[in-house]
Image (cartoon, rainbow, N blue to C red; front, side, top):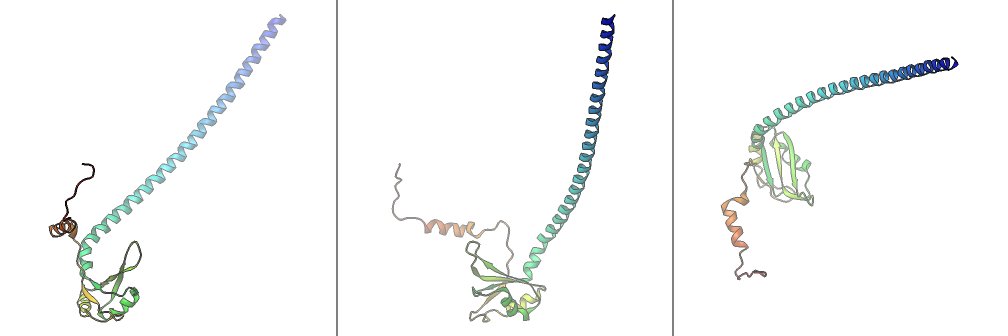
Length: 190
């Protein structure tokens, strides 16, 4: 009988241990489920934020595309309001050119082109005016003296896409003749 009691006590002890283990296991599972639900909610919030950002980016991209499409059309109009200035002194700055051409009209921008490797000026500039009539006034300043140099003033030409002077037949022919040797050439490994 003692053995039975002891066996029954062991069984009850095992059952309580199993139940407590199951309870702790259930609590752990519930905590994991709650943590996963919290993570899922956070992911949903992040996804909603990303979707909002993507909508904003798409709107911004549409705006940029709209602006660039109008810029392509406006490029010819801007070139019509601009003039080319040649024989510019290498130490001249945009403010001095702006002062020289101020009588022609309101100036939007003065651009002095520089060599991209050395940073030294190339000796010519572009001036963009507000009105097209200002370009005609600027053309009258052709051969005017600026820093003891006669300026050459002309209208700015619009670049044609796909047109390259170096690929025209005239320049290709010159390049071939210029580098042609008169002596016969023998390949060293032939």
